[in-house]
Amino acid sequence: MMAKRDSVSITRPDDWHVHLRRGEIMEMAARHTAARFARAMVMPNLSPPVRTVAEARVYRDEIAAAAGKNFQPLLSLYLTGDTGRDEVARAAEDDAIVGFKLYPAGATTNSDAGVRDPLKLMPLMEEIAARKLVLQVHAETTAPEVDVFDREAVFIERVLAPLHREVPELKIVLEHATTIEAVQFVRDSGAGVAATITAHHLLLNRNEMFRGGLRPHAYCLPVLKRERHRRALLEAACGGEPSFFLGSDSAPHPRGAKESACGCAGIYTAHAAMELYAEVFDAMDALDKLEGFASHHGADFYGMPHNAGRLELRRKARTVERVYAAGDCEVVPLRAGQTLAWSLAQE
Ligand code: NCD
Ligand code: ZN
Image 1 (cartoon, rainbow, N blue to C red):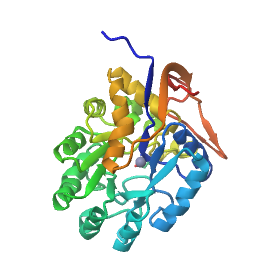
Image 2 (spheres, rainbow, N blue to C red):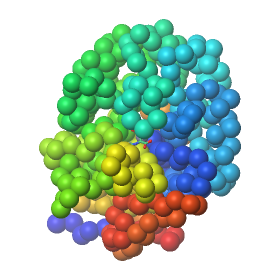
Image 3 (cartoon, helix red, strand yellow):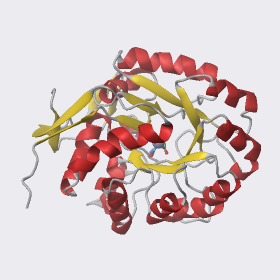
């Protein structure tokens, strides 16, 4: 057996799906993200959402001020039924805007302004493809009769597969893939379709939500799935396949909004994103595949250069804070109060 590695050095990675929010939570989340990643695609599901290039520029400047100069925010514009082709054209002119995010209306946090029937937006999809932008998709159906654990698979069948058939030249990222069906769809769809995978879906199955009681901090969307789905994600992430790459989906909420009779979906992982992925790849004996997943595949898919800097991780225990204070509110991170096996070398 090969000796276990005690450190990993990789090209500085990118997070292709993160929620930074605004205001005091953003100060914290942007700092955590910028300590690990050179670039991140910041999700536009604010309230109100980031729908236009003008709104994105304002938001990008706020993020840049919070994250400091060694970090480049990238943005995806929130697609609505009213998004016009002129907005797509403007987005293509801005280097920091790399795509449009499709939220089915009602699928997740702040998605009310999302799209009711994505298949009715074909001319817009063709325009996004023609302008060489990418469609980022929250791939869950909102049809109320569909079981919550089947929402991703049903969306792929009813919406994503037909969309890909109709507009095959459109580059699509199936965001936060959680199922065998998602992995299979990406593998079957050629180089123009990819998926991001979160650390928490690689580490946890749905039992975690009910471990000894109801655990709101393990609730996210798409919801955690069965162990066999987690196994499929591990194989996709750790196998070196270029169509799968890192998107943490770190999604901070104030503690009170999670620990509630109707708790919000979202798991905060930005405080330890790379440490958690290192743990996953280490457990799979695949630390040599971490760099591709975290630093190369996403950049290659988006046609962007690899980052110049490097990130070093060490096998060194670190205890996670029980809670992060962000102004007037608190955010409970994944692994709160527990010990992580990996640390950033510079800490
Ligand atoms: C995200 C959020 O809170 O913004 N929540 C989540 O559970 N992932 C939204 C999303 O990505 O679905
Ligand atoms: Zn998300």
